[in-house]
Amino acid sequence: MTHAIAYRAAILHSLADPAKVGLDASYAYYEDGVLVVADGHVRDIGPAEAVLARQPAGLEVIRFENKLITSGFIDTHIHFPQTEMIASYGEQLLDWLNNYTFPEERKFVDTAHAARVATLFLDELLRNGTTTAMVFGTVHKASVDAFFTESDKRNMRMIAGKVMMDRHAPDYLLDTPESGYADSKALIERWHNKGRQLYAVTPRFAPTSTAEQLSAAGRLLAEYDDVYMQTHLSENKQEIEWVKSLFPERKGYLDVYDHFGLLGERSVFAHAVHLEQEECERMGESDSVISFCPTSNLFLGSGLFDLPRMEEHQVRVGLGTDVGGGTSFSMLQTIAEAYKIQQLQQHKLHPLKALYLATLGGARSLRLEDKVGNLAVGKEADFLVLDLHATPLMQARMNNAHNLFEQLFVLMMLGDDRAIAQTYIYGECRYRRDH
Ligand code: GUN
Ligand code: ZN
Image (cartoon, rainbow, N blue to C red; front, top):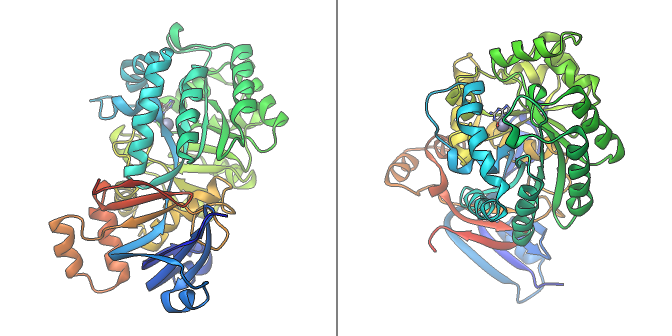
C-alpha cells in the first residue's frame, strides 16, 4: 500500500443531480476541508479537523492556500485527431467535414503523427482539468492504439474507439463492414478494461455507414456487454434530411440507430439538438445518453440544445467539448456557453447544475459513477486544485462575490485553463500550472 497523503483546502464536489434532489442536497462544501488519498483512491473527505482527528499520526498533509479542490472534469464527446484543426473558418457541419475534417484525419495514416497528436491532446486535457473523456479516433486502427498507449501511460480513465466509416467520405478514409468489425474487435480485445482504458464502438454517424456496417456495430455491442457506443445524432438540419433520404424505410434519424441495436445505457449520442418528440421518448425509454456540446453547436451554427426538455424525458445528459467542432478544451468555457444557450431559451443553468453536468453527471452518463465523478470515499482520486483568482479580472470579480455560488458562477463564466492550478490523476499530480 502506498502511503496516504492529505490535501487541505476548500473542497467542493457534486453529490447528486439538483434536478432530482434540489440544490442544497446536490453538493458538499468544506470551507476548510481535507481529502485523504491512498493507492489512487479517496480514503476520507470532510471538514479538516474531523478528518485529521481520525487519521493515523504522522500523516503527510499538503496545504493549498486560497485554492478550491474539486473532482476532475468529464468530457463526454471529443475528437483527438481534430486537435490541430480547431477553429477552422466558415462552414456548417457537412462542408466543415468535407473541407477541413476529412483531410485532417487523413494524416493519421501515419502512426508517428497519431502518437504526437495523442500526446498533445492528452496534455491539453490535463491543463484544462479534464480527467476522463469519451474520445473519437480516426478510421485508422493505429490511431486508437496510439491514443490508448499515451492515455495508459498517464493512467487516465479514457473511453475511445476507432471510427467506422464505409461510405460518403473520401476513399482514403473508408473501411469496410468486415474490416471495421475486425479492427474494432481487435482493439476491444487489446484495450477494453486494460488498466483504466475502455472501448467505444464508433460508427461516425448514419450517413457514413452502410446498413451492413451499422449492423456489424450492433453485433459488436451484442458480443461485449460492457463496451460503449458513441456516434452523432441530429446535429444539423441538412444532416437530418440527408439521413432521411438515405434510410427512407426508417421512422427518422434515431430509428436508424435503433434498428441496428445501437441504443442503450452505454450509448452516447453527441448533439441531439433537433430531436422529434417521439425520439426524445425513445432516448429516455432506451436509457441512451446525450452529450451536449455547446461551443460546437454555436461554432458550427447547428442549433440550441434544450436541456430541460431532455430532463423531462429522463434522458441522461453529459457535457462535451466536441473539439475540433468545438472551440475550447476547457469544460469551464463549455459551461459558460451552455449557460448562454439556455439563456437564449429562457432557461437558467445554475452553477451547481453545471458542476454536476461537468463531473458526476458526466460520470453517470458514462456509467462510471462508481469510479469517478466526485470525491466520495472509495472513488478513484482524479481531482483538481482550482485557482479562483487566476487572472486580475477574476481576482477583482471574486472579491466582489458574496457567496460560494456567485464565486462558482464567476469561475464558470471567466475561467479557463488558467484557473487549473493542478490536475491529479489516480492520486498522482500530472499537471501543475506553475511548472
Ligand atoms: N458528425 C459526423 N462527424 C462529425 C464530427 O467529426 N464532428 C461533428 N461535430 N459532427 C460530426
Ligand atoms: Zn463530434
